[in-house]
Image 1: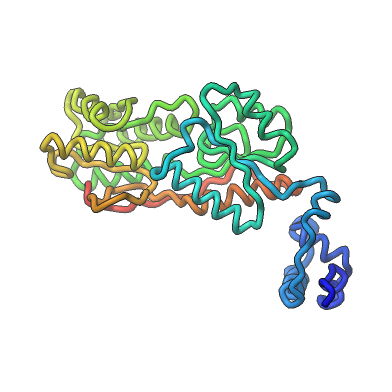
Image 2: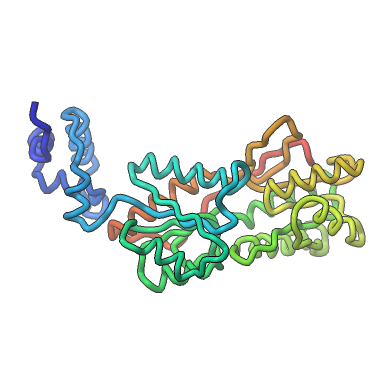
Length: 327
């Protein structure tokens, strides 16, 4: 049996072959092709079992059908936590979009220009970066005109998809205030790459001042014992901590328990992202980050940019608070 062609699809759907091409190249929305027409073409494709020849399409369009994922030196090699969860979400989004994914795992000793060159060598149509607004590669991508999208950082100069982290901080503080806590502290992560952490810290100052009468302190430190020492050195000692991530929240929880502190009686703890845990541990109160929605929206935004479809610079997704055992 002969392999079905684009002309066969057009005849079955009752449209011109050029219309089939436009729809299969994701240009129906851009050109105002009716949804009913698109549905007829998609049904004809399924009925005939038609699959475009990707190699021919790549030659004709000048595109590869691949997108790149640039990972900083601290974003790869982990099997759990935020980076592992975010990478998994991106992989699922790319798979559902029927694209190829080329992952570049950056090293700390490789300069930005070299990392950029490895992505810009013509093997990908566009690039995704994660939580890296202040990484030198972001303005370099923007400067060269290569299609790129940031996922996770709302301070990015690139088109981005991010969560409303400031509202997440507000929800956490309002929850703590309603539970009777009065001395909040913000546990931040000192990152030279991401701008959103600074936005969350500013939201903490603003919202803690509004709710508790004076802005609460913050600690820019690493996780675990060091974070707990910094928190306990405050005067007065905080009775609740808003952590910038679940990884920090769980590490703080573990350190507090080792020292005989009661959570949430002596110290309430909130986190971000609602990450899955390994083993039976108390469930943190945490801001729910829609990781898969972030990844899906980021891949979709990049696909639209590659196709030349105008898209908004900023996409901000809402968050909600999951109340757990730590408040």
